[in-house]
Amino acid sequence: MNINNITTIEECRNVLKKEIKTFKDWPQKGVNFKDIQSILVNPELAAVTSFYLKELLPKNTQNEFLFNKILCFDARGFLFGFDLAKTAKSPMILARKPGKLPGKVITQTFEKEYGLDEIQIQDGLIQPGDRVLIHDDLLATGGTAGAAAEIILKCGAEIAGFNFIMDLTFLPGRETLHKYVSDDKIKALLQF
Image 1: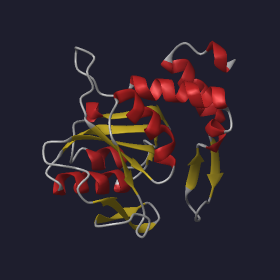
Image 2: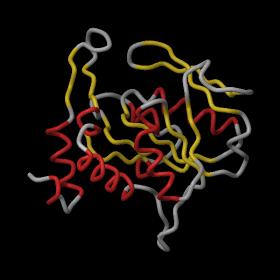
Image 3: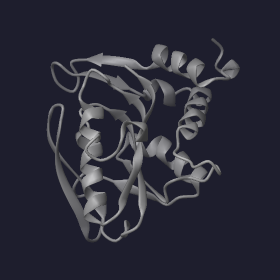
Image 4: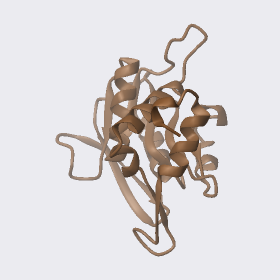
């Protein structure tokens, strides 16, 4: 299918499923890594992907966005997250690995599918009453997204939902995130 002829979200999903490469046993044995590089090297496919990710953003019946900030993960979450933030005219908050952000930070430790990790955001960016959407490229075990949700709750804010390019449905990520939101607030462009 010609990318310029994609007119539905299902057509987009079909193309993405064919284009996204899987790297077996990376970064360690037993992990089959889904890589979005194949989207990024094709500007037309990246534009179509961004368009349909925007279609998944939570809105009310008046077409108003149901979040006022978006939190995105280092580094692949930044790539499409910035487009989403611009579309919603919403501040974008960077969630990064330790040592990457200046100033006072809020840290959350979490377990990923292949070990422990930490994320941080700069203190003061999320305020009580904020409604924060969490975006990343991939939902696997839900550890990273759950850690962001914990930070948001520590700040006294609300989790507006989750937005992903891919949901690995054979892993428990969606179940993990049900602790924070109902299933209809967990959106993914495609599922594997």
